[in-house]
Image (tube, rainbow, N blue to C red; front, side, top):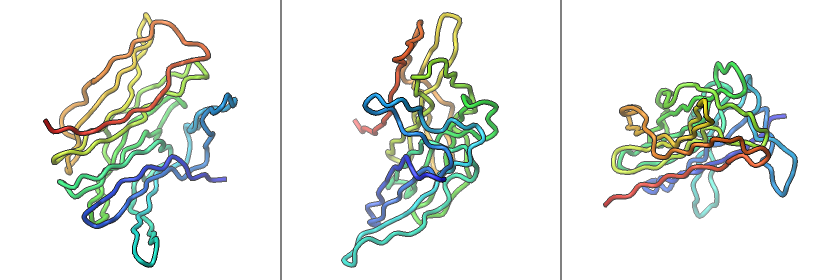
Length: 214
């Protein structure tokens, strides 16, 4: 049975309009809570899961919900984030993507710009597919992208894994996106080397980002 999960919401204050993005898919397993022996969601390289959206407003008559614009068009899409930039009058959706994945460990980071009038632009790749090797069943780190909006651009951040001879290096990578697509190359903002495997208690977490004008 299909599941709806992993919602994120952004708000367009000029129009009083919210956009929610979420996963609509065929393979969801809930996170480990209170010691439950479960795995992370998205363990199928051939998943049909995609990112869908809904828009909604509030009025005196109550809640008004509409089907939202296209976010992802292919399967294997998980863990979205969405943000609205009033300077650009645009929403941006990003997600981790397993299209054409060879194994369950392969992930790319993909995005799509959506105008304030809810017109979808083309998909674009922020980070090409790389393996996120799951040598420890307790590990839950995948790209897990997050967004911030400021001035005329967005900033996307995500986890990236690299296997080294002496251990595993995790970085938090970032990239700027303007309304016409990604700008420049991705760059690391934090390094997290792990020389030993953390059996049974692998590092896990999520990212968040914010914009600050000094």
